[in-house]
Amino acid sequence: MKGHVLVIDDEKNYLLLLEALLNEEGIEVTGLSDPEMALDFLEESEVDVVVTDMKMPRLSGQDILEKVKKDFPHIPVIIMTAFGSIDGAVEAMRCGAFDYLTKPFSNEELILVVKRALNFAHMEQENVFLKESLVQKYAKKHVIGKSKKIQTVLHLLEKVAPSKSTVLILGESGTGKELIARALHYSSPRSKGPFVAINCMALNPALLESELFGHEKGSFTGAVATKKGKFELASGGTLFLDEIGELSPEIQVKLLRVLQERKIERVGGTKSIPVDIRLVCATNKNLKQEVEKGNFREDLYYRLNVVEIELPPLRERKEDIPLLVAYFVNKICEQNSLPLKHFTPEALEYLSLYDWPGNVRQLENVVERCVVLSSSEQIGVEDLPSEVKDEETQLKSAVDLLPLRLNLAETLEKIEEALIKRALVKSNFVQVKAAEMLGISKSLLQYKIKKYNISF
Ligand SMILES: Nc1ncnc2c1ncn2[C@@H]1O[C@H](COP(=O)(O)OP(=O)(O)OP(=O)(O)O)[C@@H](O)[C@H]1O
Ligand SMILES: [Mg+2]
Image (tube, rainbow, N blue to C red; front, side):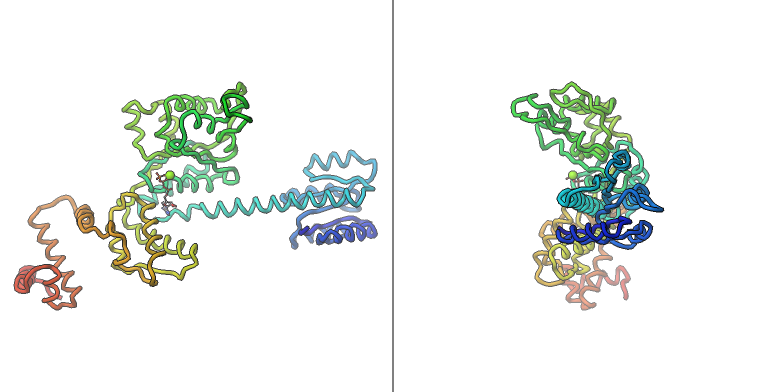
């Protein structure tokens, strides 16, 4: 079994014996007879498990245990005590020792306890690693955007993350509601606890109820065993209720009660179970309107809407599109082990003008398709899907960008002037070509150049 065990015992012969025994099992062992040296050794080496004698001069096993618990809380400590000093062993367990061995113990006993501790240590390390990688993966820095609108969202997120306040996230489909919910959890003090998500639309009301609150064995046909609900599973962490606008009236009442009392009862159960969760909800519906229409309880709406984060649709923060594209290109190339590709400025312009009804998710999908399908490292306009190139929608979104103090004749003239300039630049000032591009005769073009006094 893999692992590194530090054994501390002031009796050198005994130490040698333990070392030999564990070595035989393929375990790497360092034996030290000086407890102070052992503590220094811990600082500078990778140790998975500590086995220490209780009674030693200067520093006792108890001192070692306390020090390890404080500085290396993930390293399990096994205490060896002399026969008859059971009080010391009890005290050690109380202080967080992993286990104890009473001398004299058999070889098998020693090996069994050490292996169990090593297993435990590996699991702990894996857990810490997994949690850290999740924290990394969902850190705020992965919410891309420099626009004022998204920066406002990020500031708000920073402000509410440390609290336990319920947060309601609103926004159209694909705007990043789940991304923000996770970023909120992983930048909160609960980041080490679980993030549990449930989509309220995916299940029928009866199933949803038992998913949320759990059920007792036998409470309905098919309830063959007691099951914990999401509220219990999210204990110490964050519960994310997605598509909250779809909750049936019955579940709305139950949810309201849970939020008031901070306790749940499993389906078919009688016991109240306290819940310690932070609740984050999301919906792409206009919840206020749903309240007005009588589809959503007003009292529940106010309980959920303690802090509201509204995500802007992508078309309202088009300046973020180039950043998002670069981020997705990087991510997708890395995931698929492809050389880094890039969009030509012209293709990027198309992406920046398009309206993105499916928001960031649609943009991500389009970028992925282009990156994976394009055969060269350059992705040009010809590689873009047709919906992005559709001229009518392009025109419409260009018009949407115009200021609203319009005088029709003046505006049309300005657009005409701009288009003529562009055609001239694109055709390298060859007037025949520019006229062809614009679909007008050369003489008409020349007339317009004079009219607008265009010169370069
Ligand atoms: N600002 C952003 N930066 C980087 N990626 C983003 C951003 N916003 C959204 N995404 C990505 O877009 C995709 C859709 O986001 P998400 O699933 O969070 O949207 P949603 O609002 O929950 O959508 P729906 O309402 O359809 O469930 C995800 O892959 C997400 O990582
Ligand atoms: Mg979602």
